[in-house]
Image 1 (tube, each protein chain N blue to C red):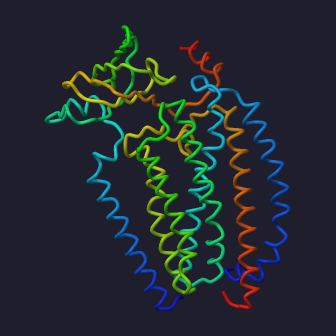
Image 2: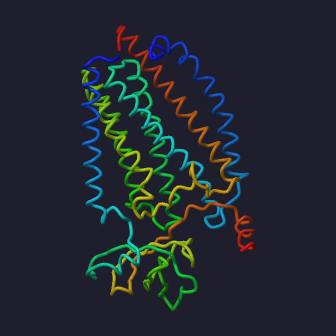
Image 3: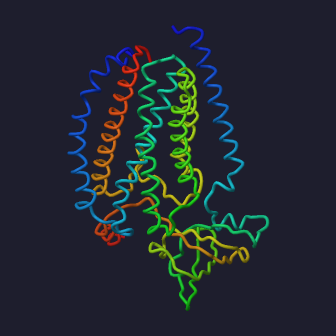
Length: 235
Length: 141
């Protein structure tokens, strides 16, 4: 099964995929933005600033999701010496970091009119900042080390240790008193966002997921071409 | 199925992961006092001794019908539905600050039931809905 992820096989797909992903992304982001900015209602208490949520929440979800995927791939890389996952993990990081920063910035912009402060050192916000630092260290580590063997081990280790932070982010609002509100969307309990606001949220999440897939594919193809040009037939 | 080396690496990695996760847990546990963003009126009440020189944050709900404005000063009661604390503050409050809503006050304790706030933050809850839905909810109450 894992053989299907070998770069020379996967490149046949990944080199053609971006244009289709871009096409679907443009359609979904257009509908999503119309829903989020025009059609969806304002909130009963925060008025129009609720619209920031449609960017903030999907970005946060995606940055958490991507980091978790990188960590799981890294686990396989370290244990089974899987070569195919290395480039996948490496190529996922930039879009994860971008969405992490978007989540922090939009949260700050929302916090000023709502809470009355740009920043609070509460558990949710601080742990999200730590995630961003993990992303930065992960990406920097790829640039710092020359030795291929070493760089794989170091980056994978960073991702695996960073995974400890992921449940802390998720449950920070339940474990400690925070300024950040608890989760509104629950799989096992009642969702406290009105259905008219769920539609743009879901669309924007899909759009951002497609966008990160697009960035991932472009980065992945670039990495593969780099390796080919170096004349290396191994990773 | 897998070689000895794979098993050894799995064991080693799981061990490191668990050790680090456990250390993080213990660190956070011992720093709990600093990790929490605010404390509740009940926690204030249960403190063995209070430090009036330390800047702290207290949080809870603004009790209904307790906001009073006189000249530059605003006073209200923060409640966690078990205990209450009286807060005085002079300055501007965020838009979302209102009765029955969450609030975090940063400042100094005068004693166990009086708090002198230097900064007021409004806390938003997890409920999002359009105004019409809110009105309909109110009407059915």
